[in-house]
Image 1: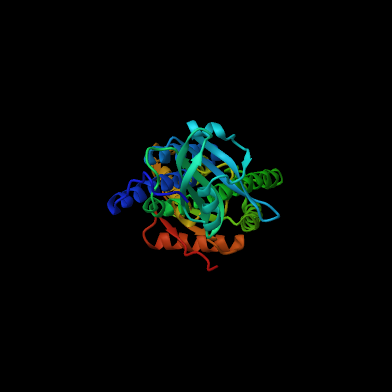
Image 2: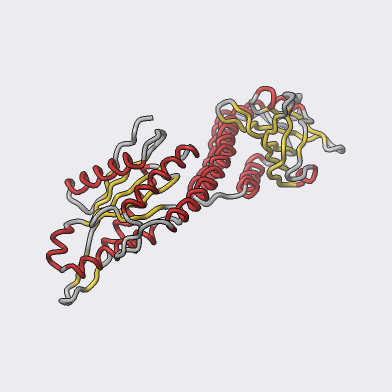
Length: 362
């Protein structure tokens, strides 16, 4: 730990602002990780480092992951760096804690301040351990500024350090999700090669879709990821067929199938479930995310009109039901049944809407 010489005291108001601004940086990074494509750690963490360096007025910042050894010793592996002090580190290289702040942060799992030496001068330094549920996942080290770090700053940055641990954990989960989606895409390609296809829509028929749902349910459970199922059903299908005839009704089904196929991801399974209904399986989606997909599909179909043989314009609407495994293990057939019950609820509520089934209990 360092002496207090040169330390500028941080008022409670300034500490609250620092805590808020640091948390905003972490939350924004977590949001990018959760909603965007899986990004490299160095790219996303590099942005976090630059923002934290500017916030605290430091010369350099380094983010590293914790590498425990079999003998209980700890080392750190550089993930990202920025600033002049980053020249002392090499991305991907391991290094042992060499300063009081780093050693203290590793020991206590709490932010620690100290003074580091670059061989020519002594630089104020703060080490922020990145933890998730008491497990140390990494470290963020900021050094070199006009005044020493204070104890109040250590306390103000503790919530950021916790959020930073969640960010590193998020990278692990994002990587797991990406691998599971790749496995599912390969599996679905294999299933599609042997699938019996519906002649009208070109989608897999119901038996093939049932097998795909069970496969997706198994893979999602193994990967620890949620699985969502959407069932969509044409509104007033019988009345539509009676009014416009079989050919126009078939056109309505084909248009719905195209809209469905173009709305979902390559990793999602799409199939025909009944005479006027379709099914979608979405790996890694919870109920809320799947409901957004269903609403997007509903709006797209609602806005589509086409002419029939008589010259009249025909428009169609959909009712959709969503079910997700949440944290529980659930068979594909059970998910589809819950989604169908949600479709019935949507129709009772007036049609042309999306209803979500309550998740199964863990």
